[in-house]
Structure formats: structure tokens, C-alpha cells
Image 1 (cartoon, rainbow, N blue to C red):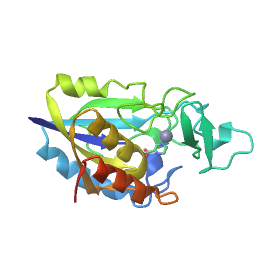
Image 2 (tube, helix red, strand yellow):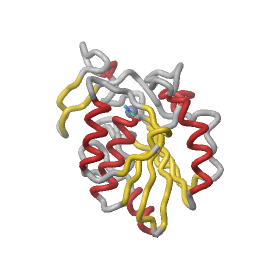
Image 3 (spheres, rainbow, N blue to C red):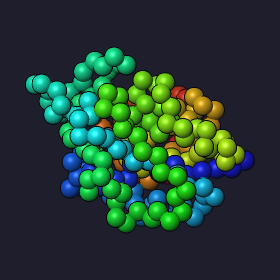
Image 4 (cartoon, rainbow, N blue to C red):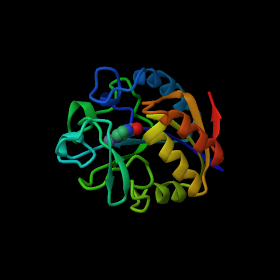
Length: 199
Ligand code: VGL
Ligand code: ZN
């Protein structure tokens, strides 16, 4: 059995001072740096949107950030502009250790489709290719860390379970956005799907 650490979206825009700052988002960095030593394989994701991305409230008429709209693929939260391709906000936190990261998956690049999960875009159908990579490497078990617990980390955890991986969520290595009870809902869904929660 091979286990991998999946580091989700530890980017400047999700840290204090960023455009979609997660409370204490930067606190995950030293924890994740230490954890990497315990895994033979480390993979990271980067939220990586074009400026015209449809998940940005600014790209819709009369839409407020954090409101929800119906897209063809289902409900979509409209976010403040964040993680625009090539911007400083889209860069990894400067203190995040990257030397041992063997693959960086960039997601959310299609203007018409958001991608919270590291495995599938928000239509729950279009793949990123990460599952194939992990399977080719013999990975059967994953530990997830990063930002944000209730969106990209949570959706990745649920998809990983759906794909048959054993999944552990390291809560001290995650922080949440917590929009209208989204953290409680995400934790309940993860527990129900068989994600092991540790600190
Ligand atoms: C995320 C909202 C929008 C995340 C990304 O990384 O959790 N959340 N884009
Ligand atoms: Zn995003």
C-alpha cells in the first residue's frame, strides 16, 4: 500500500491578506511542511482561474460575492476574484515547501466550469487526471491537507472516497471558509463517506 499527501490550494489568495482569505489559512503551512516527511509521495493543487472565470461574482451582472447561482452543472457560489493565473495571489504561500512535490495539478482553468475538487470539475464528470496519476503510482491511501476544508479539501476528499481511495483528513493542516454552515456540512459528509478525521 502506498500513501500520498495531497496538499490543496495553499495559495496566497486563501491566506490572510489575500483576495479570498481563509481565517488562519497561513497556519497550515508549517504543519504541512512537517507532514511531508511522513509520505513517500506529495502532490499539490493550485486553483488557477482565467480572469473571465464564471465563478467570479464580478463576471456576472448584479451579483454579490458569496451569493449562489444556478449553472448548467448545478448551484455555484460566486466568489470574489481570486487565484487568477500568473498573479501573486495564485502563487503558493512563499513558505510552503515544494521540493518534494512531484506533481502540481492546476484546476479551475475552464472559464465556464469551476473545479473545487482535485479529481473532478464541478460538473462531477470532467476529470483532472489526478486519479490516473495516483493509481499509476500505486497509491491506495491519501491524506488531505490545505484550504479550504469545506470547499476544495472537502470536495476532493469525497471524490477520493468515490474513486475508492482510503482518505484521512488532517484537521490541524486545514482551515475553512465556513459559509452558512458549510464547514459542519462538509465534515458530516466526509464522515458519512468514510473519511477518517485526525488532527
Ligand atoms: C476554493 C472557493 C473558490 C478552495 C477555491 O480552494 O477551497 N474555494 N475556489
Ligand atoms: Zn477558485
